[in-house]
Image (cartoon, rainbow, N blue to C red):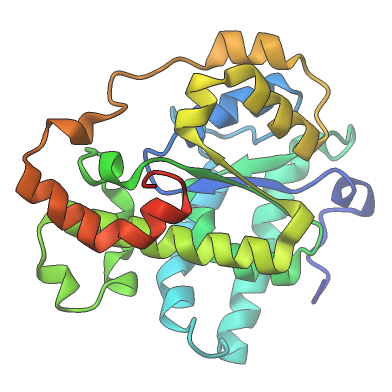
Length: 261
């Protein structure tokens, strides 16, 4: 770890465990599940279970980081991000500073900062939640597209329909996270599909608890927190021409994540 941004040696043996994905992918359910397992995800949360301190950090730094992703961050910018991260971690971990427990945070947009977080917190684990990009294209939750679309989409792509812009962003950021997780985090990386969590909740929650070394009851957590939302498969309601365009844009990642065979 560079610059010693540690929240404490004992806490570093218990986290951080980061839950991330594109907006609306089911990270809220996963956050509730890991809380059932005994993981601290923050004292200041919004209704979506996002850690507010890290949401503010994302607002401050994602676009800057993504703008420099093709090259090294300028030293002055990196130092500012590190200092801010140190303070954010301190505030986040303060409630458990005298009673260490498994900890981390759910802030979906942490997916954009994953390489930076890993560079400076080598013990982190990343739980990557993926949901069908075709459903995501028609979600009302397009916050990430609005806030960070310019950082991931070229100017021609930004002229496409909202659904096509959405699946383009979905494809790109999930591909980047999956590549980084598989190549660099390895056993500290777990990817789950939201649809599988809904279809086989106990087995998927068992995988999550084992990955994060949580001691809760997977069956109870699954029963209390996991339900199949009516929006699963909403993409099927759209016309064939629209869906053909979506498949053309997102085909590679839809296949990679098991949504096309």
